[in-house]
Amino acid sequence: MMLEERHLLSNRSGCIGLKYLRARGEFGEGEEYQLDTTAKIATSCAVSSAPPRILLLYRCYSSSFTAYPSILAGEGLMEVDVIAPSRHVIRQSVWVGEHFAANSDEAFLVVLCERLKSGAYQALFCIDEPSRELVLANAQLPELFDYLPFGSQSELNRAAVDKGAFYHWCARHSIPCPKSVCTQSASEVLGLAEEFEFPLVVKGARGAGGIEVDIVRSQQELEVVLNAHREREGWVLQEFIDGPVGTTTFVAREGRRYAIYSVVNRVCMRGGTGPSAICESIYDPRLAALADVMIRDGGVNGMTGFDWMLTPDGEYRVIDPHFGRAVPNAVAGHLSGVNWGHAFWASLVGKEPALVCAVDEPSYTVWLFPQALQLLFEPHFWKSFRTYSPFRADVKLFLCGRREWRLFLCQLAEHFLGRFRVLAGAFKGRMLGKRSGSRRGGRS
Image (tube, rainbow, N blue to C red):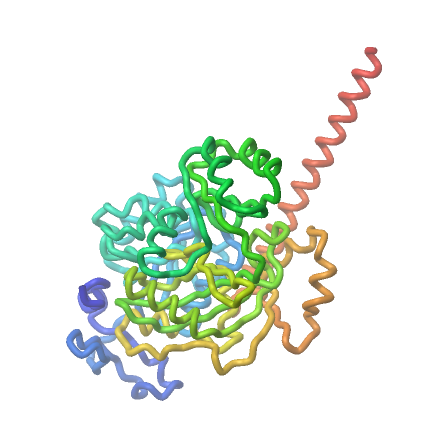
């Protein structure tokens, strides 16, 4: 399927206003352009039309995901609307055209199908894991056919949300992964663990953000994890690799890569298994080669990526896909010269890829907000602060998207209010416990 047919650009837009490219010197002053569907180039036309419009889905999470409206719409190349819960902080973004509220999965699907049937959008972008799961679970809906990150019959619809299926897919396409075994039954985990040496990694087959990831160092620890998570839908046992963890993000469409950016995690939340709070940009052509295999063999479209580990021997192992959804630490790409918005726009309108990467840019260590706020409540905060001091020239702070200070302040307030509620709840629990104990002592 041609890109122009898949996204119905010629039918929905007629032509695409590109006056905002005059500063780049790529197009004539004040001219308008339309797509040539045979040569995939822009040619002038007389009719004016709006830029491509993207529909962003926020089912639950915020974090640095809130920077994506700025990334996509901040240069005027595209416009964005969002579907999100009515109280989601993304409604504060200055770059969001319309916020369509949906507070349940059922309402979310109804609003999503209505918006896509309107024909107003050239692309759909799942921002967080819950929105991706909801979309892929309903991939057979006819309204979604032209907007899926891969075809409705693609095996990646399952592999993107099931780690076991993903590792099998990688093995068939010669993508290196850590040694892994999968099972649907918790009762089989102890027996399968005999194939590994401790420590080993135990994961839920589903989930993201390190939520269902445990590093176990003994049989006793493994039994504790099993007893605590009997309800898990599938298990993955994986060899433990003592090496850096990182993420590669790319923009791709119709088998072509438009941009790529990689980071290695320096400090992660939840003691090291959670999302990245401090990361450092890197460039390695081997990661670009892995991304190209995924794009070519998986037909992955949009802006997405994958997590990896570096072995002590210097070899990369892919550990987790982000296929079909956004990547939180990609928001700092502009600090290394990667223009995600332009790459995403170019992929939609059929421009030739510029193969944007950070190979010639200086490497920066970046504190990602609001994730880095969580470090304030973790024991290794001061060690992280001394090691990656924000006052160093090669250390940057990513606070928020362009002109998003209102959104940033709302996220700050939301974060600290949440922490206050947690602390207040813990204090209340301790006080009630003390009262209960004193009453029992008095009766005795």
